[in-house]
Length: 346
Image (cartoon, rainbow, N blue to C red; front, side):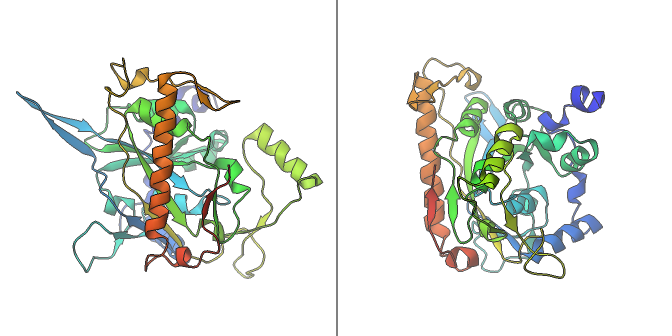
């Protein structure tokens, strides 16, 4: 336990090899392929995310590692689409940037973005239990603390690959509004991932999981009920939500914890580059970015706070454009079957 809690920093640095994803044509990959096809989960690429960039100077050429922070929306009950699309390498994939009219059958994030090393951010509680901790690390998961962003994204031992963190932005609060046929987002004041992306000089990339909220049926709990008070207590003291929901089981479709068999289409958007150092007035490096915002009034208290709000607004705009562009695409069955449009509820 001392080693797990105090010595091993894999949950923050993202150094553990995610061997449980399984290489192509392996037994593990076959297992995850069957799991992804059960719904199914389809991963869509709409823009290039190169692992490196080349900067030409007068006397030399410099190659830099690209960094990305992908924001996944919506959370749903347990973010099944995010796990299937990014923690495994087995979701069916479509490359919209390819000019070929007939694409070979591809699977997994690595087939679309081969030059990126990716890690999925999850709750710190998932790393408190020894054996569960090893499972999550072996799937490429990392702790959701700000130290993870700062250690992983600034780790220069990349073997020529870009760095990519996937964050399910809405968290516990968003799982409480995961109604079927809708995309209700808790995003208005979620700026921490934007701040960390700017501090690392990383690109922000919006991601939408159409159909994520259809995987479970969530029951409403009246605000004044005893159950609602329990949910509030658990969220406040333990950091995770406790929605009342049902899925299906192997033998019954009306009861169980397995996701309902309905498609999830995960669309990866275009990268939003960080502000330049010239825009970060007086800064010599991104690590000096230190925004201050009054939480009670939501007013920026310094120039960095204004920039943070601007880049968060850019991200929200790109997210809405991604939704509008692909909500009725031919391959987007859950998008076309929606009952409500995307909303930012708080």
